[in-house]
Length: 178
Ligand SMILES: [Zn+2]
Image 1 (cartoon, protein in one colour):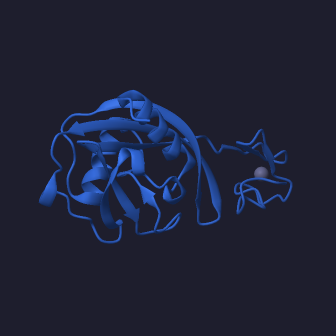
Image 2: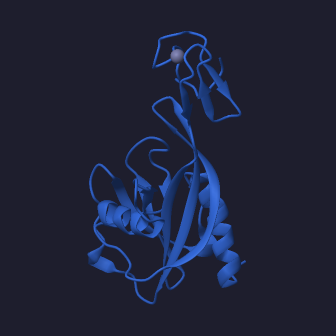
């Protein structure tokens, strides 16, 4: 049955090859009744705006290695999206904003190790009048480097994910930048 690339070829419960993938999210084994929902995963990121310069991280890992992304990542079980965004900030750049606001959420597809994960990406924003300077330190393995890019000048073809491009557009509308 067709499913997420790299998905189950045999039922993980009974080993039957007749396992089916339905509605873009459900694995069902007619032989034993095994069900697994490949549900939408939640991710969170923060637009850190320093007087019109947006903090981007250059991704150190696949997917989209070398592309521009925000500090952010997947929400853990029992974690709030806000807390995940702050935790990921700390893990990737060694610093996090103390206050932020919700911007919007957008769907995305995250390809990792041969599996497609449908995600719902939550975007927050934090505004500063000065950049955090030396407090921001790219954490090796997570972040290749940190870049500050003017909101009007973001090279959209280097932005890692379609949901992030939509978030940038939403933020431009919010702050009135053409
Ligand atoms: Zn089965």
